[in-house]
Amino acid sequence: MKVHFISVFHSVGQGLFYTSDIYAGRSDFKIVYDCGAERGREHYIEAAINRHKRYSRNKKKIDLLILSHLHYDHISGLQNLMDNFEVKDVFLPYLSPTERLILALEYINLSSEFEWYYSFLSDPVVFLIENGVERVILMGGEEGDEGPDIPEPENLPENPNDNLLKLDIEKFPQDNKIPVEKNWQEYKGYKLFMLNHIGYAVIRDIRRLPLWIFRFFNYKIPQPNLKKFDECLKHHKLPVIDIKSLISSQSEIKKIKECYHTITKKTLKDLNNTSLMLYHGPLGRYNLEFAITPFFKYDYYNNNRKYSFNRFAKIGQFLTGDINLNHNYYQIIEHFSKVKSNILITMVPHHGSNKSWKDKILTDLTYSNFWIISAGIKNKFHHPSIDTVMDIVYNGKYLLWANERNSVIIKGEIEWI
Image 1 (tube, rainbow, N blue to C red):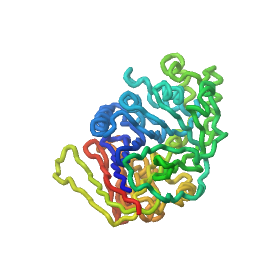
Image 2: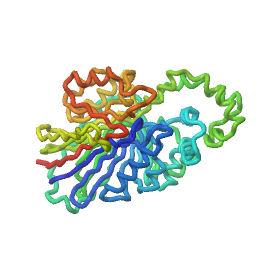
Image 3: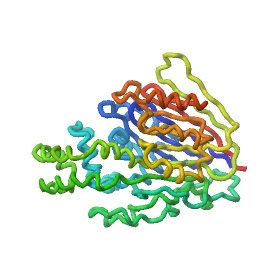
């Protein structure tokens, strides 16, 4: 049985738009992880979505959309994406209304074209369902664990032409710590699922055999850090029920800004640590051929190179959002311990920020030979950090940079044995 795949870190600059398409004969399974560019440069994500639609075999479908976290630069293309594709399943971390309000306050006065972002933060579940999403999966889970044994598929079908690839989320336990907000009651267990990251999801073929696995990890920021903010909101009688209305009211904004000053910088940075990390890759034993192409749209240096490989045994990919590796690092490594030897390609977290980087990951992920950074060529944060870049290069790894001019394309073929 052969499966073809193509994964792309698109050229969106300071943001992230990752897609991965898996083809088995006439069937396919389409994955998107984040879809955003920074404020003022949204045209990059719009162009990337249009290119992805143009070159996709099935132009109308996304089977699995993962929103690592809810910062604007990672989801600014969400409305555009849903206008152009039918989205089946969306995974995202649960954030409380208070946390979502804090995010909205970081992006006041968005142009009318992007005001949907406030509606999304007001109620992400209802927003997604009203935009046609079939299932919304809120992910919880604060501690890492080894998780269940990874399934090994047997008796793989010889002919993939009639395969129907579907995502099975039944291997996740329920997370009872996630509160059911008022507007969500009617959807729970039908269109809304609250799951803990301890388990895993798999793509199954028409015979219910598992072919591809997904493991997630995320954790919550400490709620005591938000106590003063909540108390201030109550003092001003500002219930967090409609973020869009609060943001649009100038009188309310003045009161909210007063409360905003009670939030520490650490708490604001912790919102990056709500990022939903993802490992995904094929199961079982297989032969692998693949190539990685750093594709420059404006080939100023005439150095479009293609790295072709067939000597690596696994092709697992590890996506990290804006996570800070210095926070709960050992929980993360433990959580992915049963799949880390399968990881060949890793996304450098938080656009290559040195403050979010921990060089020990280079030795813990021994077999990850390819490291991808998604960051703008010129950005106010000076990403990627030269220290992060040097750590990766000096350890003998391949480093590729997706930016405004350059996409990174991973394309290959898997044949199970």
